[in-house]
Image 1 (cartoon, one colour):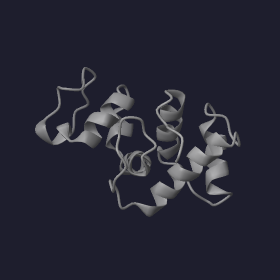
Image 2 (cartoon, one colour):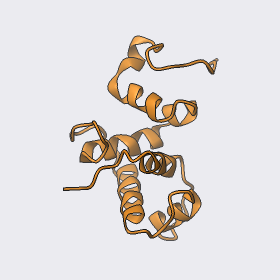
Image 3 (spheres, one colour):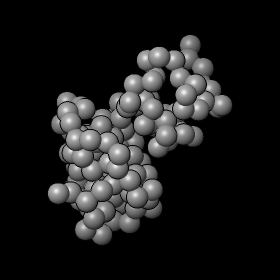
Length: 124
């Protein structure tokens, strides 16, 4: 059985949780353990990191996820083009999935949180 820790802070992690992706996820989502642990949001975050658009993270190959990378990139592009407001994740998801029968799994939360905190840098 897994116990949630409401008092979790960066630096209190076990050694496996000290990996850069876990530390970064804990900093961006300090009050949302689910977003820190889920694979889809994690892969969306790592995909944006890989592109070099997350402030303070060098570009690199951080994930192999093709689908979550695509969702994150399309969400970032939609926000940049003002196709959906950053405070309406449902609308953003509809723009991203283009009417496909998909259920979001935290990817939009990652992108909108980074966007609102101004942690997404311009491409280029």
